[in-house]
Every structure is written in structure tokens, then in C-alpha cells.
Amino acid sequence: MPKLKADHIDNTPAEDAAITAAAMADPDAMPFTDAEWEAAKPRLKIGRPKLERPKVYTPIRFDADIVDAFKSTGKGWQTRMNAALRQFLDEHPIQKA
Image 1 (tube, rainbow, N blue to C red):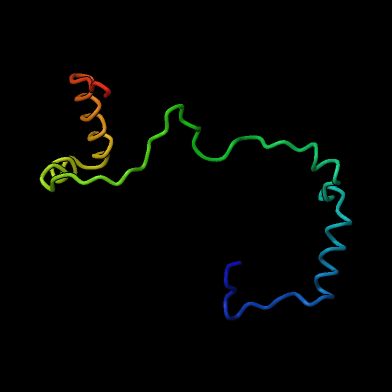
Image 2: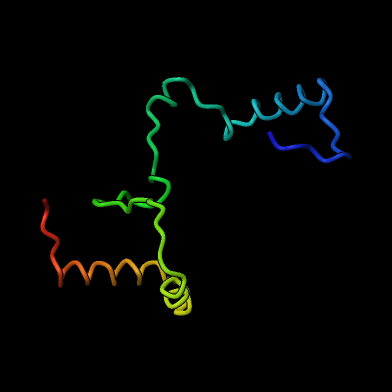
């Protein structure tokens, strides 16, 4: 839970009971029943869609001048580096041992 501000004041039990009673008296704000929660379905999926072939994280070392050259091209340099490696593989197929 996040820390509360120093001047935060909690509701008293009486205030909390009054707020709960007012909420329960509002016909437009009735809480869901267990059956309604079971029937509820998410409207949309959160986050990016799953990729068919997701990228793989692997730490790798390159010469500093190569990394500097790609970084100097600005935002998206890693994508461009990936494209350059892909182009190399397309032009120079690697034979598996």
C-alpha cells in the first residue's frame, strides 16, 4: 500500500458507517452479487498483444564504435540494429552444424 500523507485523517467508524449506509441506499450504486461477478467478463485485454515471435533478451557485447554509430541515429537504434543483423542473415545464410 502507498504511504499516506502526514496530514491524512481516517474516517471514524461512525463516519464510515454513514458513508456505507448512504451508498447502500443508492439504487444506482448497488454492489455486485457473487453471481454477477461470476458472469462478468473483461471488456478488453490490458497491455500489448502477444507477438507470434517475441523478441528474446540476451546480453551481448559489441564494439563501442558500432554501438555509438547506431545510437547516433536516434530513437529506435536497437530496432535498426536488429534490422541490420536480419539483413546480414538474409544475405549470408548460416549453415547449421
